[in-house]
Image (cartoon, rainbow, N blue to C red; front, side, top):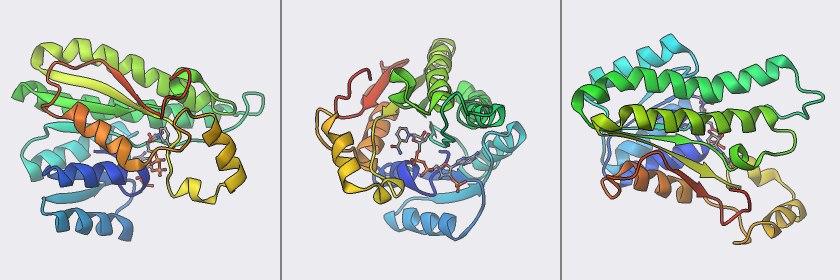
Length: 239
Ligand code: NDP
């Protein structure tokens, strides 16, 4: 999986490990955080290894998957979680801001899908879960670049689902809404209350609630589900 050094990706890695999956994950650098995640996953009782890879870079994604296949033998599930934001109103957004977010969020899904597809095709099964966002469906102020990248992930995933279905490779998208992470910890309480009041369930989601949706879509519990978009958003409108 991509981007498990913190946030939602970290929760996904832990949840898959608790379900008994060996976990190969990446971040952009091998650092203390990556080693700590490796140790945490290993303590759950599975094989776990972190790799330094920029998954938005084609060659880096190819090398990452090659190393994982050499170390783990096969990959049954790919979770494309790595993603960034670089917010600005369209009036002020630079071309560089637009390109960087599109390149990282959409480009990484393309690069990783290209890299993993031959081995999944050969083994005749696989499950790919891409992390979108409700913002990709509903749009959002100051996030036109991010919303466009996440909307594009839906179209890309549905196309792959059609192309890969004959080889028993499923491709689905999980779209989180407002999720509590390290980043949201600094949001003032009154602003949190305002945002939560717009969510029918009146609270942010947890990272583990996103992770559980990923496990479901990746698992044998839904062998006939492909090409779906599953919002994890407490019933937010437009999702
Ligand atoms: P974080 O910024 O907390 O974590 C992002 C992860 O991705 C990190 O582990 C980071 O690792 C990794 N990463 C980023 N770019 C790259 C890259 N080019 N190559 C390899 N790894 C990379 O994000 P969140 O946990 O908040 O979000 C995770 C996903 O969920 C994203 O796709 C995001 O768009 C989506 N999402 C999040 C929501 C939220 O409320 N938080 C809501 C909806 C969707 P490192 O820094 O070590 O390289």
